[in-house]
Every structure is written in structure tokens, then in C-alpha cells.
Image 1 (cartoon, helix red, strand yellow):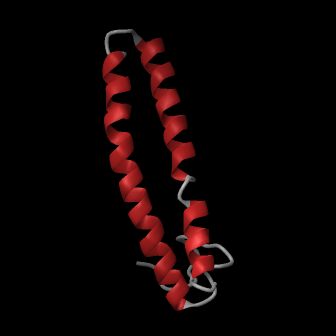
Image 2 (cartoon, helix red, strand yellow; image 1 turned 45 degrees about the horizontal axis):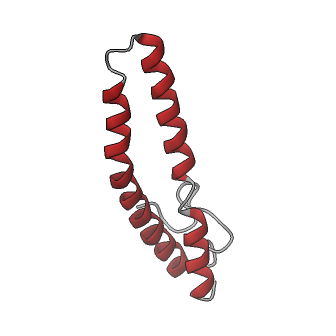
Length: 90
């Protein structure tokens, strides 16, 4: 894990308050990302399996849609993490 305040990781005003907030934010955000990733795997795989015989353009379109949905979902844990940091007094 990078050191507190390094140039990578979950860097927001609240997470940079101190080493305890930094560690909490990374633990909390990482747990949410793991849950989200596990939840997105089955539907993502199902969508890609449904289009496997559809040709390159169909696979590209569906693959792009899956990637876009996953990228948007990757940002979803930011708000709960910030709220948890605020409840902790950050």
C-alpha cells in the first residue's frame, strides 16, 4: 500500500486529513470495489456470452457498453466513502 499522502490512491480532501483517515478510506473504498466487482462479473459475462456469435461489430458494441457501465460503476463508491469519512469526523 502506498504511504499516506502519496501521489496514488484514493485522494480527496477528507481522505488526506491524516494517516488514519487515509487508511480508513482505502479500506472502505477497496471493500466497496470488491463487492461491486463481484456483483458486476455475472451480468458482464452474461452480456458478452449472449453476443459471442454476433460478429465483430456486435461484440464491439456490447463490449463497449459493458466497459462503459463498469467505468461508471467504478465511481459509485466515492459518495459512500466520503459519507463514511464525514461520519468519522473528517
